[in-house]
Length: 467
Image (cartoon, rainbow, N blue to C red):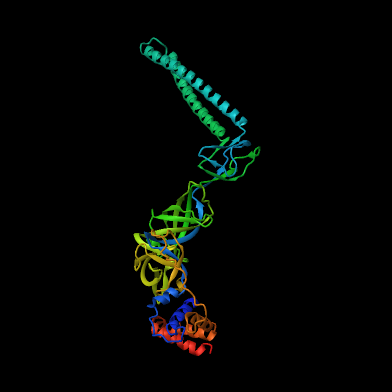
C-alpha cells in the first residue's frame, strides 16, 4: 500500500474550511451548503501560507555519469645525480616551480675540470702528431715514386729502391696510428666534458619540486636521488565506469571536474584513454581523464567528482527539482496564479541535472512554481511568496498585500473562529488524527470531493469532538 503523507496544517485548514460551510451565522441561522473551493469569501479569510517560489526558465539540461576518484600527476620524475662531488650550490627549495633545463644543483667541479683540461690538451697534441705524420707520409711517398721511376731507367740501385719503399709503408702506418690516437683523445675529451656537465644537475621537466633529498655541502655520488619534480598542470583522473555505461563514453569527450575541497570551483577535462577490458570482479572499465589546471588549485591526491556528459538538451524549460511533488506515481507542481492562489498541475519531466529538471509538458516559461511549502498546499490555497529562488519575475511580486479581514468583537457561535477552535481541539485527539490518516491512505478520493470531505469531517466531529 502506498503511504501518502499530508501535513497536519493542511488537514486542519481543509477541515476548517469544510465545516465552516456547514456552520451558522451569528444568530445561529443555518446556511445553505457552499462549494469548498468556490466560496471566495472563505478563501480570502483563510490564512495565507508562506512559500518560496521560482520562475521557470529556459536553458540546457544534460545527462551525465558521475564517478569519484583521486587525482594523479601525469608526470612525476625522480631526479638523480650522474656525477660525484660535494654540493656546492643549491638553486631550489621544496615547493619551488622550476623550468625545464633549469639548474638545480652545482657540484664541486675542480677535479673533473682538471681531467677535462688534460683531455683537451691531449687532443691538441694528437692533432699536431697527426699533422707531422701526414708530412712524413707525403715525403716518403714522393721518394718512393721517384726511385721507382729511376729503377726502371737503371739509375738507382735495387737496395735504394727497397729502402724508400719501406719508408713509405712506415710513414703510412705512422699516419694511421696518429689518426687513431687523435680519435681516442677526442673520445676521452668528450667523456671528460660529460663528467664536467654532470657537475650541474638540471631539471628534466617543468614542474614543482615536491621533494628534496640533498643539503648544501652534502657528498653526492652517482645515482643518488636529488629531488622529485611533479607536473602540477597536467593531472589524471582515473575512474571506473560500470560496463552498462562505458559504451556511452568515447575518447575526446568532455568532463567536468569538481573537488570537494574547492567548493564552487569547476574544472574541465577530456577523456584520453578507455580500457579495452572489463574487470570481471567489479564489472567496471577504467577511463582516464586528463585535466589541465594552470591556476595550481588542483593537486595530486585530491578527491574529486568527475561528471561525464553523455547528452544535452538545449533551450528547454527547466525548474528546480525540489519544486516537483510526487503523488500516485505522477509528478505535480503548484503553479502560483495572479490572484495569489495555487493551481495543482500534473507535469511531464525529462532530463535531470543536479538541482534542475527538464519540463517537457505542464509548465510554461516564466510561470512561477512553488519550491518550498508544498506540504501545506492543495488546489486553490492562498499563498504568500516569502522568497524567490533565482531572479524574481520582471513584473515584481505577484503578492497582493491585503489587510486581514476584521475580526468580530465578541465570540460568534458557529462562526469561523469557533470552527477553527473546534478543529484544533479535534486534531489534539490521537484517535481522530489516526482515523484521518487511515482514511487518507485507504481512500484518498474522499479528500478530493468537497461533499465527501464535508461529510467525513462532520463524522469526525460527531465521533471525537468535545460534547
